[in-house]
Length: 448
Ligand code: 2M8
Picture 1 (cartoon, rainbow, N blue to C red):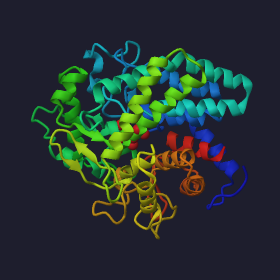
Picture 2: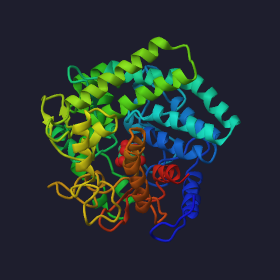
Picture 3: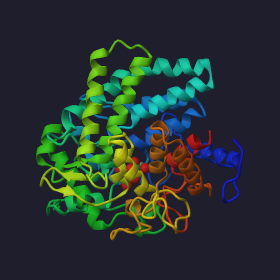
C-alpha cells in the first residue's frame, strides 16, 4: 500500500516499524506483550500478535499459537500469562503459585486465570492470510490447523463447561484481568464487594515503574483487590468449581461472551473448510455460539441496544456504559433496527464522533460519562486493539464503509510509530508502554 499518515510517516515506514517491534520483542518461541512492562506472553495478546506475525512469516505466526497451546492446562484452560524467565513483572509465577494446581502444565509456569477467547478468530485470520501469501504457506497453516484444532476445541469446551453462567448464558469471569479490561468502570461495583483480608501477603508493585506516570495505571486500592482474588484462588488450588464457589468476584462479561460467539463459529468454520472429522464437536460449537449470541442480546437494553455485564453474586446488572457495551456489534446479536441504533450511538458525538478526538475511534469510556479519565488505562484512553476488533467485525458483518473508516482512523491513532499501549484521545499522546506488540500487530493487519 502507499500513502502517508497524518504525522508524515509513509505506510511503508509504519509497517516496517511495526515489523521491527515484533522482531525486537521476539524471544524465539514467543513475542512478549511489550519489552519492559510485560516481558511475558499474554493469552489474548498472543492471538493478535500471531495475526501480525503472519504478514512477516506464517510459520512464525503458527509457532506463537503453538507456544501458547503448549501451556494449556490439562483440563483445557488456556492461561492468561505464560511466563518467560524475565524479571520485572509482578505478580510473577511465585506469587501466582500455580505449581500447587494438579492441572497445570509441566514444562512452563503460568498464571491461574484466563483471558478472552480470541484464538480461533486469529487462527482463521492467519489461514486466510497464508492462502493469500503462497501455496506452501497455505498448506503449512492448514496442517497446523488440523493438528491444533482439538486443543482449541478443548479450550472452548472448558469455557462452556465451567464458565457459561446459567440462566443468563454470559461468560463468567472471576477476575477483572480475565476481561482484559482490568480497571474498566465496568467492574467498579463488583470490586466494591472484594474486601482484601488482613492476611493478604505483602507485595511491591512493579507496573507503575514501567510507565511515565503512575496515574496511567490502576490505583493501589484496585491492585490490593486484584491480588486478593489471586490469593483466594491459590487457596483452592485453582480448581475451577471451587474458584467459582469461593471467589469474591464473579461476573458475566458481555464483551468476552461476544468474542466467544465469534470464536466458536470460526473454529467450526475451520473444521468444515478442512473437512475435519469432528461433526459432533462442530455442532456443539455452533450451539455455544448461538447460546452466547442470545446471552448478549438478552443483556442488551431494549431501548438503546447497549449490553451490560452482570454481577453474578448479587444478580445486579452492572450499568456502566463503556466501549464494551457495544459488544452486540461484534457478534451481530441484535435485530437490524436495534443494531442501526447502536451503530449510530457508537459513531456519534458521545463516542467515535466526539468533536475533540484526534482519531475518530471510540475511547474506552465516553468523554461524556462521569467516570471518564483521559489518561488512565481502561477508563478513557483509546486502545488500538479494541478498534481493530470492531473494524474487523464490521468488515465481516457487511459494514464495509465503516470498517474502512475505522481502519483509516485507527492508523491515524498509531501513526506516530511509537506503538503505544493506549492513547490520550484529545492529544493523541501514547500512554502506558510503547513498543506494545499487539498495537504493532494490528497496525500490520490494517496496512498489509
Ligand atoms: C493488561 O493486563 C495486565 C494483567 O493481565 C496488567 O496490567 O498487568 C491488560 O491491558 C490486558 O488486556 C493485556 O492483555 C495485558 C498485556 O498487554 O496488559
